[in-house]
Image 1: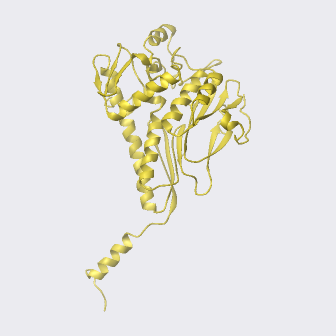
Image 2: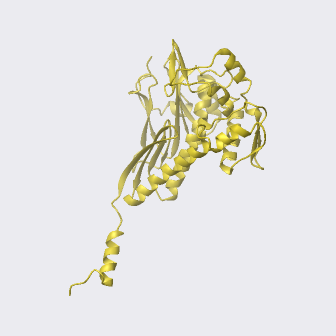
Image 3: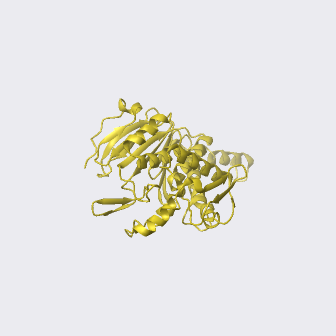
Length: 335
């Protein structure tokens, strides 16, 4: 007997066919969010579920950008900068936690990491090759200092100690977003993934039987690498003087600002940090960049579970003790 399209058995057959599991696959999705390139690569046992997971990553990146962008007037960060010098500003739980961690990193690094660097950072325009003059920089330096952040973590409020103080979470907001994205993937059952936001990335699991291979760029020849690291279940962040910069004669003016001077830090060309989470790896990549090779490596050695690869101002390669015997062979950094 022929079955019509309305026959119950036929309807059950159609439903089963439409909802069958899509083939397993590696999936890649890319977008431009938070002023940088966002990329997620993951293995999904079901392609449809994998595509939904990748979309969730991009949604989370957009959410963090809406909350923490210094350029979106309605972001929580912009509201803080507008109001915190006049009153105690209520904070979200997320922002409270991030600012508390920022203060912890400032203490840990002796101020080399400091989100109040924004008082000087806002005076630079790398696209237009604009830098502050001496008078403007001197005025900005008086406004820099994490001690001017009056955070009430229990009451979830923040107040600035004086007018003109500003904060910028660019030092670790991307690492935080990557952490959140990887947590979302794990919750959805994804076991193998790589999420990156510019120079900040985190790998979940391995690459189905072999490590993820993450390359560290040569700071002067960006098509070449100084090392390739085989990694599993770790975060990696690189800060370099080649990301946002312009050259003023022999001086490279770039976005990694030394809070003590308001000028671009000059002791190294790039710093790569490996840590358990992206918030730590990104914050320490900025701190070590400012501190330089000797003090920076000393900080890394004191901080358990953290490793570093540094290319100094002369192009020489340095690594923390845990990596010295395991660092893969690579061409030396060049002048």
